[in-house]
Length: 383
Image 1 (tube, rainbow, N blue to C red):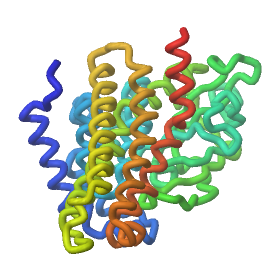
Image 2 (tube, one colour):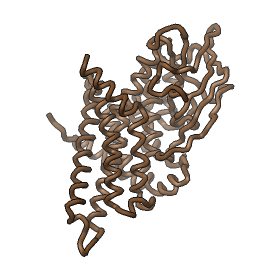
Image 3 (cartoon, rainbow, N blue to C red):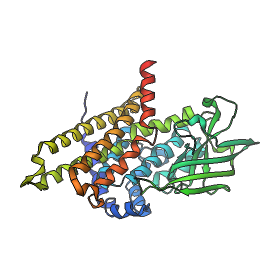
Image 4 (cartoon, one colour):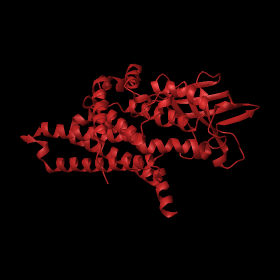
């Protein structure tokens, strides 16, 4: 077993970190306070090549594997300290563009992937509904066939990038009588379609620089050619691939946040004095730092193992769910430790530490809650 990154991978990680420090980190405090998406920062990220990182080279992407894409997200989170940007980029890549790359027709790929690779178009995926989150079979958004056209009606919520995208992959029920595995179809819906509406901007605890919205569909007509994948296979084909990429790759952003929190805490512990000496000399502080480091190492290994298994064609569903479950919970625990270690300053936004907690919490909910991951793991254990 070789757990070391190659020299090329190490150099790439260093380059992404350096880019993020220079072009993403400046102004993050103000952007977070305002809950503001920054198009200029996005364009710099896209210009650096991150918007098309895993997309096939024939459509303008870099053809990077899951592991490399995760390394980039981890490094961007560490250097840029902008979890919202990472959320939007990760969603654009893993549940926006990659489903088209993996399941799209040649016409769909030619239409959307080159623009997504340059960041000119941003991807989004709409599956969650107000009354259907983890229970995907409970979705009510419908797509009624009328000849060679489908008419969509319903509401989707918690949609990352929903107000930024030119096209949104929407999962809708096409057969009201079929079992869940055959009842839903994915459609590429252009956001300028009549009846498509961003019906609500949602204010969030963290990841505030990324827009999250509610979408409404009122008699939105889409052609049969807009179906992504095969009719009736949205949950077990397109949807599964989305969640798979999220759990193997996108969770790396939280690992980058954990590394940043640990390094900031070490720096502060060495500089901050109490009772005449640095607080780093106190056992209570040392124990917190040690536990943060242990969690970080476990989180990184689990995420990279899942990514490596996926890249190499091995069974990885359990490892992906383990990575998602562990990283989310560990990120929250370490963020709490970082705040406690910083004392009063950890509660003030100028030190960036409190934002680490607000941002980390999403990893225990989005893309499948910790409880859902534990259910997946237990089912695989008991199969």
